[in-house]
Image (cartoon, rainbow, N blue to C red):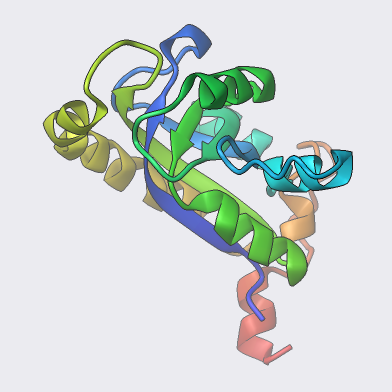
Length: 184
C-alpha cells in the first residue's frame, strides 16, 4: 500500500479567496460541492465529505505556496446551490476528481495531498471552458515548476514528520525512501 497519494492537476480558483491564474495550491482539506444526499444529517454530511489531507503547511511556507480547501464537483459550471456549498466550505478551488480519490484514501487509511494549479477564476461570470483552454498552458507550466519542488520536499521524509514544527523535526528519523529500500 502506498505511503501517500498525490493528486496533481488543475482547478478553478476563487479570486475572493486570493486565487489568481497560475497559482499552485496545496490542499488543507477536500470536500464535495455538488453531491447532495438529503436523507438525514448523516447522509448529508457524508455527501459533502470532509477529507483530511496531509499537513504540508511547513512545505507550503518553505516553497511560498498557497494552501486551502479543494472542492470537487461534476461540472465546470456551478449552480446557485453549488455556489452556496462552496461558500460554506471555504474552498479556494474547485475541480472534478480529488474528493473521490480522497474518499478511497480514507477507506484505506492512506494520506492524500492535492496539488492544483489555477486555470480559471470560478467566482466571476465568465465561461470556464474558454478560460480553462486559454490558461491551461500557464497553469501547466506553474504546476510543472512547483510539483518537483513539492516532491523533493516530501521524498526522504517520514509522513509523520512532515507536519511537525521545524524544531521537532529530526533529520535522523528513517525516511520513506529508506524504508522502501529496506523493503519494510
